Length: 279
Ligand code: C2E
Ligand code: CA
Ligand code: CA
Ligand code: CA
Figure 1 (cartoon, rainbow, N blue to C red):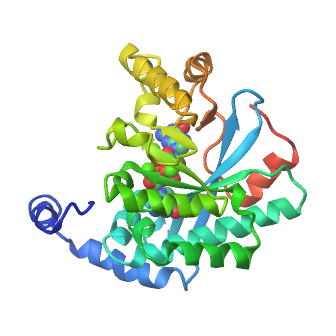
Figure 2: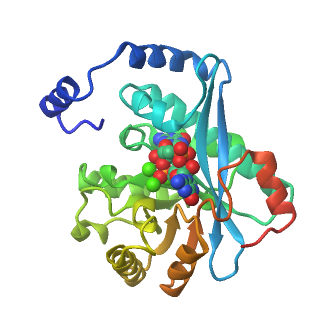
């Protein structure tokens, strides 16, 4: 649950999502999980549609819970977001992904972009820039290969301060993408004001791309609009050749999805890079 101001948030909690014993238990476990080394970062390839080559990797967290087993981020990221836990967790992911990216560069593999998801709360914390700088320094990862994925929930916060933060990050060389584009509440009017590099078309549009002509129309419109604003477009959740064909036809720049690969451990990703696996 995102907070939209104190009252509304409490209403939502009270009516729809009472804090359960289970949520509290997961929160308690989360506090220990970083030190206990229970998290893992998986990497999902992003493929350029012109060359067919891997151009990036999205870092996606997993939690190997000692009793609950493998947990997906959907089960614990929202809980971490309710507290400051998301800050430490997010930093752990950033550090892990940047040092992995640095390792791949050092191995002499084709340099790829590493995309890391940032929660709204992480984005607006005042220490974001110095903490990012510290991570970049300690890992030695070149910031021009780091991309931060933010959702529209970040954009509907304070517009001018958000633009300022983004410009600060871009001055470091970091790229910014809008995740789940088209599913949030941000206005198209605002879009041009933010210094993004990439729009990610949400998989909810891609899902019906071949079955529903309206989704195909929306997707085409997003791609054309993004290009006219000089943004790259990446479609997520691409599972079939038919979806790929429509995206190609509509000049989408890149894709990510099970069609090419699920999110995989770093060692498997390294094999892809070593063998120059292409789409
Ligand atoms: P997201 O950022 O939209 O990430 C894409 C999700 O779609 C991932 O789910 C990925 O595994 C899944 N996916 C990729 N290709 C396909 C496909 O072809 N078909 C289908 N059905 N699914 C596909 P995942 O890894 O479970 O992550 C879920 C969400 O959790 C992410 O959505 C993101 O919002 C959040 N998340 C994951 N890792 C992090 C993290 O390190 N920090 C933060 N703040 N959030 C994270
Ligand atoms: Ca994402
Ligand atoms: Ca998504
Ligand atoms: Ca998302």
